[in-house]
Image 1 (tube, rainbow, N blue to C red):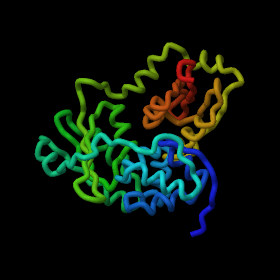
Image 2: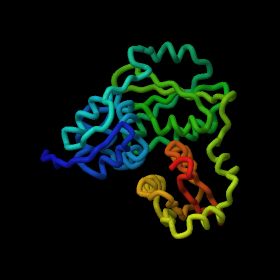
Image 3: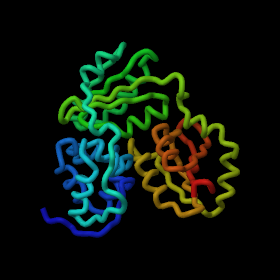
Image 4: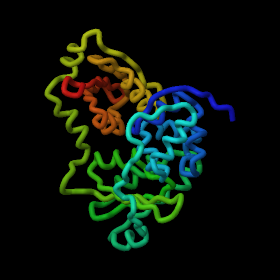
Length: 282
């Protein structure tokens, strides 16, 4: 394979989608590390995972040290900025998944490997299982990689998680509702309680607004498109989005990246979004 040699700086927080956009060889190079990364070759899963996963996250997903991933990216011309070593909190701990399962009462198991093997995203299946999960029950997801985006999503909804690797290529992630610390849809509640109105903030930005329409895109393209667009926003600029609905999966991602969001519902298929960084976060 002839490699295209380019130069681009990156760090542990750089999104995998950014690297792929810069150099298409990124897909093959990362996939060559081990079989955990082969999912990157699947176009559907790549669109879902790549915009949400950083270099640091990808190392966890693949079950490798971040230095391995950095070295591979440097081989095709990327230059790393920062400290390469990454101390994993779980490093040195060997956890037996069977013993963990025995400790848990009311365990509900869901194996998503067949869904992944068929090239589909198991997100909807998992969320259906979460929806009917009782407070006293624990959901065990059996997967081939650590589901970082899913963990973030469910954490925002008040679920604690624990991930173990019983054997190579197998990952078990346990989710249980934390009824003492979290409130369901916490991020959405923050949006609803915003002290400033949509119209007022829209007027404040004046001409410093970038507009996009994602209503005709199929999932997960709306979220992928929005995340790409906010990376290009200039200081003091806002992104105005024509959307069908409030994008639940997007809210925790925006909060993590220090973006605020306001919305205005017109009808069941038309919602206006205004996404921006406030003065405290710029």
